[in-house]
Length: 254
Ligand SMILES: Nc1nc2c(c(=O)[nH]1)N[C@H]1C(S)=C(S)[C@@H](COP(=O)(O)O)O[C@H]1N2
Ligand SMILES: [Mo]
Image 1: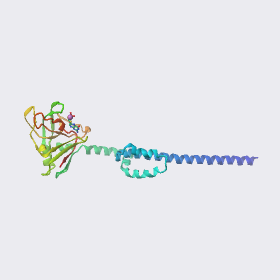
Image 2: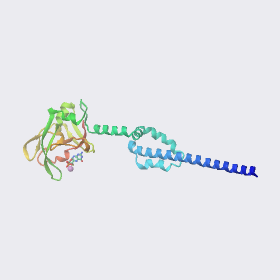
Image 3: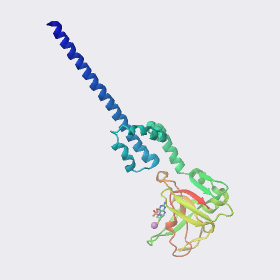
Image 4: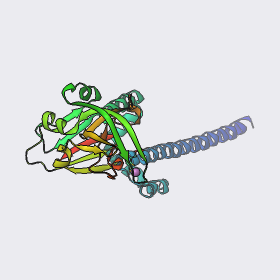
């Protein structure tokens, strides 16, 4: 009798251990697969948008296939492609440092194209160009008929291109491109012109300038590159304000 009940007890115990062990290991396996799959998919979804700019419809596919075994095999491929983004998100201090660097880099004025001296100027460098600094009041007229007078300080654009960037003698076109994509195109002759007018003041003769200061106040670098193209009028009634490209990122010479 005692040996039989012992055996039964041992059997129950064994069964219990087997069931527990089986369930636990199964759950663990499923859980770890689930977690890693979801983590991978979440990560690659975020990184796809950042790195490749892919849309949601493309990155949604892996999510639907989480339950399928084929999907995780494809995950490492994406991981390799997105190593840089992954490192950034894993190390906030590095990402922070790169953000600051990007901001400084974004606030330089680039002059590129058909020139001998490619330039990547900081605000301090631009301000130190004493020989080409220009400060005066400019008249503005916009397409709605709004007018105004504003004092600007900056450098003469033609002098910047001729003396500092060493523009090529065969250059013909100059395009200023802002960080928001807004851009204006001028001929070399339009940029060379030093006698733009103010229709309200016949004595004015104004060059095109790249200004960093307006009515005595410098542009806030937090709002983007602190450079604005200012140009007077070609003739009375000339709507000149739309040409005042703000937050200039680069000047392309062709
Ligand atoms: N970067 C950039 N510069 C720009 C524009 C713009 O959309 N982006 N708009 C232009 C137009 S159409 C006008 S009328 C003036 C408006 O200048 P304000 O914003 O100082 O009034 O900026 C000009 N410069
Ligand atoms: Mo405008």
